[in-house]
Image 1 (tube, one colour):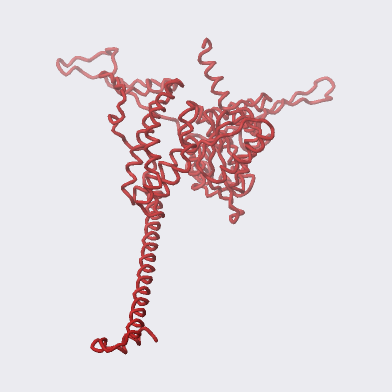
Image 2 (image 1 turned 45 degrees about the vertical axis):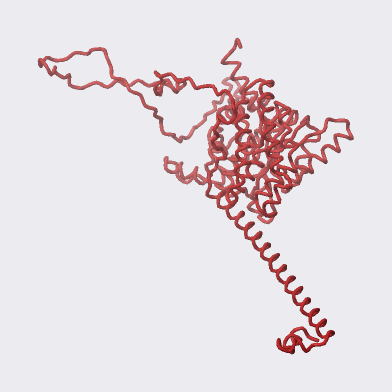
Length: 520
């Protein structure tokens, strides 16, 4: 009998007249209805929890995107150092310290002295007599400049003839240039390239600036071509950076970012960056596969790769180690970036305040690392040993028992699982004073290429992508060595024009230091 009809067919005052079999049938029908109601309630509760988790996930993504586009660019946060029980050296501030004059702040600049005098000699305000020159001055200084001036250089090569037989004419040889017979000097070519790749000024804006300075109608396409010509000309130093400074490195940073190819927008391209303390090297590829890394690492001496936990990076380590194992070479170990792990907790904090405890522990870890900067290896290890309890506390907080307190799809649980899964690689730097705590140095080297990508939207062709990689390799390597990219590039071009060996930015730095300290 239908359950609903059964209930309707038995009025309450007639229950006493039911037989035993009818009562049993009624009880069973009632139990089935109750069970069905329970299932419906459980199903609705499950749907509610699922909707709540989806809502939480959407909120997390919204907060992440909002912070990414509108939030602070720095990840630094203050920490009450008294919590660390460390001796903090006090800064010695000279009470007599004052603001330096421009000539003191910039002693390398030429000093132009301008004396101002009155055309009419004044009279004394007391007695009315004419005053005389006292030999004293009221001195002030300011920093100034001469506006940049474009001009045309006409080169006349003298010809020599024989006055006796008139049989031959000898012409003075041409001065070597990047583009022999070209319309642009080496200085202008370097200025265009450095304006774009060092100062991040698009070629279009460069021509606009030149127009305001009196040079109208400077063709953009021909200036872009000069950057390609310069990149081809300095390619020997790029190969030297790769072979002599990147591949022999004990450890390497690696990271990548998207690179827009305007003539092939449907195919994703990526700018790959490799670096250490003295050199930076870039390549553009149409893949994010770990094969890019493994191809570079196979014949390198690198033993530690500093990166994030991207699966492609893991695959590259696996492939490289298989090759090295077959050839009896040292294996590569992964060193994961703690800044990535900390960043995930910061993203979670926007929605879940409980993430603050994880961030506070990372604050203490990073404070200790800041104290270790520039210290001898034994002192670095001593300070890093003090980080271990904080890492262990983080590990215990990221246990499965703690995860059960939160939604499995929440950003906090994602951060906790990321830390737990990669704990060994995140803490590998603790036992090796040479290894860095994170991959921030490489991320900083990618900052200018990323800003440049947004400024000039991408490159038209494969050749443009190669020029992009070559010139950013030079500029970022110069920054690592704290030398002026323009000065270095001018010296490099002159050296290559005279068939001398290409010198890397690090070699140029050492050469300058040896000239400044010949007895050192």
